[in-house]
Image (tube, rainbow, N blue to C red):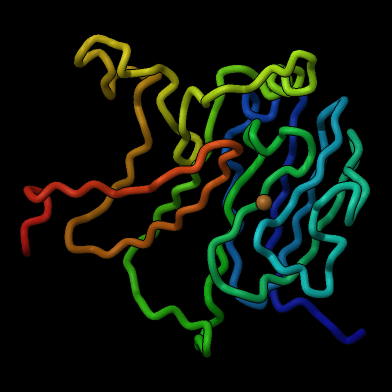
Length: 234
Ligand SMILES: [Cu+2]
């Protein structure tokens, strides 16, 4: 047809049987592209008993509706052992997400970010700011029970509600324990189950935080607390 992708950005996602969140890391790798790029993602379903499909949240899929990742609607699910290649154009700059669209796999941790930079030269989509560094905040709610147990409860009579999440994750990290029930001072950075994510920043520099929420149940308010002592004028 005379059409050729300007740049191919490839990512290989591989799922394992032992449990999405336990065997792999969550969130998944960040996909980086530039406005106008064609993104190609090859997804291999290594689960033995579950289907998979990946939705590219916020991507408009103009001309590629079959790459939207909604199984049963735009595609058949990827069967165990099968591989499916998603190909789509990222036509707008910004922060987007990808996540599983089958069962509760999204909540189990199969998700990640897509970062699309503005096309060189800018044009109408040029960003009106500059920054020295970038951090990603991908929020998620997290239960100690597996999503299989949760799904069983939700499908049971009587109905078994999942309840409030035990942890809130920032880019896959959160407090596993309830620190407010522990002795004063017991919940500190030396305890692995208490440590949260730390973003390194250098004074005087400007950082962009890309913030996205993958929560299944929780509506979150996101605040950045500042201390005056640490923010003296330079
Ligand atoms: Cu979505």
